[in-house]
Image (cartoon, rainbow, N blue to C red; front, side, top):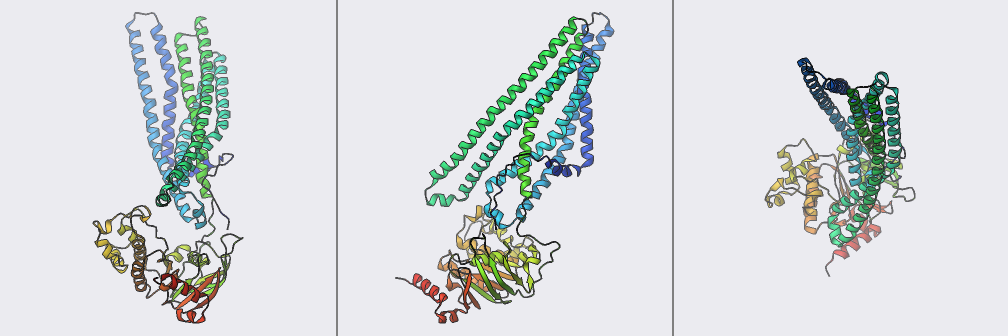
Length: 597
């Protein structure tokens, strides 16, 4: 199976089809979007009307008259100007409020879709991921969607419409030179912004990549806090983190300098256009072709165009970055799991729990086979153990039974049903596992046990705790079952975590139980307590034990011995010892290792 790493996918070109992916989430609130667009139109009408009111105020005040009627007119115009400006702001606020819910709903839906998809991906993906970089990619992607939806819909298109209206007004009502200067300056501004932004994009990508890398290193190091302390490698971890931060700093500096070049060029174009327009307007006023109010109107129009146009440059820059971030997030949705349900796959129906491995070949990578022609059966209600040296393929068998991977050859059947043709959910619901390393959620003991059956009552949870021999430990701690276990359960010992795993499995009440070297790292006393719990909960279940310590599986109905992915022996503990073969040598080696000097 091929290795996959999707933590920092950086596309060479932006996929504008992303907008088509986002649009359906907008259309779920069609009426709200239409209302928001209506208020957008009202706001733009008010915005374009403001310079005309301002023109009439100035022209009225410029008139040489002592009539009281003339005093009333500017007051009325000033009031109208104030009301129009207020309407412009209010309409914009109503628009943003109406569209806000659409944006929030879309982000929620998309985030949930990505989250579900990540859980649907197979183990191969998650073994190759970097959690910190992945979480940062998703965070930037959802922020990018928020920006894209709000500013593309309510800033880019409205600004372009407003520019078209203003150019038309200047062309029709005033000298065509005003329209030409405005049009040329806007074309130059947009062209310069687009070209420079394309040039800058590589620095934005480089900065984001460095940001994800440094975040991944930080989280990875903190998750392995104890290991760092064991080997006193704090300086090494700090140096590794600092190297990534140095790359981020350099990328940030390049990004900042390129932004300076962009902003400086935009400011030069705006200043040149404003100066040319004001010079032309002043000349026309001196020639008597325009009034002072017309001069103010043109100045107001230019400011009104270039203010949002300057913002349009920012929006375009951010939109390019947002599209890159969204594409990285959406690229996760394009990852297809290697292990998935067939269309309309039926549920697995357990009738006893008989497990059959038929001619299994499996390899994680083609060049290195793990299991070779493995054949064995776990009869319903029986206890079968799998033993062998490290790397023999013992834990791989548990992963194949859970369908974390699919076999390369052969089949695995439960009660005669090929697990590949039945739904993953029903398969995994039928199997309970106590893993070698139990990882807990950063929650209470009570909720960690309840995770085995989310619908279980407190009484059922307490009964599972009792059966797992956890009562003595829980009664000895101040907060009892409400004790927080810490991230990944680091506040608890290995034996305490294993018993929580057993309690979870008891609560799940599966037909098939798998114990994957669940006592390999425990002391003798903890092992004895856990084995007692094993025996209690496996009385009426099909049980598969993957064992390192042979002393834990002497009562198994059948013991399968693996060596380099092949079954070399099988039988009961006594019969295998009598054969004086591979199993007997393992047994003698372990007995010698545990015998006191």
